[in-house]
Image 1 (tube, rainbow, N blue to C red):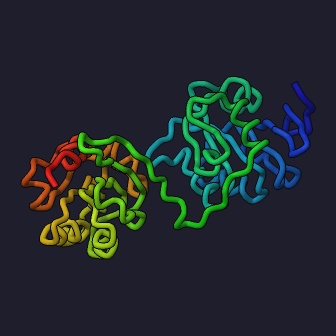
Image 2: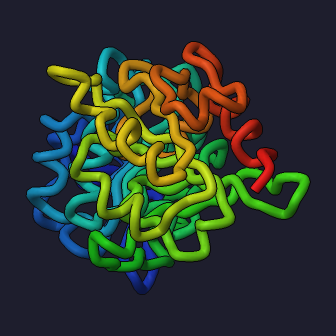
Image 3: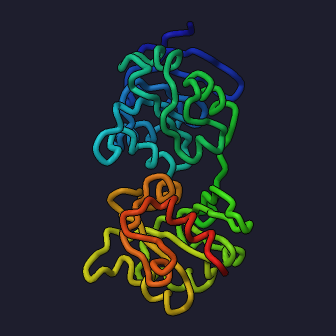
Length: 281
């Protein structure tokens, strides 16, 4: 299979670096810095991610270990993302924990971070393929304002689009004819962004509502300005992830305009978005 360096087993070597398999994130070391893909057959929480990132390998792949409460078993992917290190985890049911070579040969990717996506890694891909893609590719290095994750979900019957993006701050002037699903709270701090892009309709997060329903105060206020809006329950849809608003969102509040056309509390966000996109101008 490859050379054994003690705690690490080399399974591939090329001009850009190596793919190294190991049982634990704690086995990553200084020899991997800036060149190797670390295939470590343990969980990818924040604690092991700190040990991996201390040595800054080119990329790393671990195991999701069932993901767990608050995503704790793979939360280290976001730690890596903040450092622009490509990271991914494999479905624990496809691997033998503690066996890095088995992870490389048999693992199937279940979650990826943004730098890994930049390289071309996708959910459902084999770990072996993902590791080679990481080795041969470099992630982008965008500024925070450039990572908008803008995705068109559907086109309405009148040509209007339903678009997911991670914050209302990323709304564009062209969204005056679109329905936006975003993932920040809709308190009064959202008002400048809503007023700037004036979406045809919007669904944001309620941010957990907060004292005096402050997490959705902006949504209520803009109804008097002609903007149709709703929020989703922050306990059900992930804040900061517009796609989760679409896939997981359940409407928790609506403003008077959205209510007048049939958007209701308890409705899936997808259903609400389709009502908004079909409304008469």
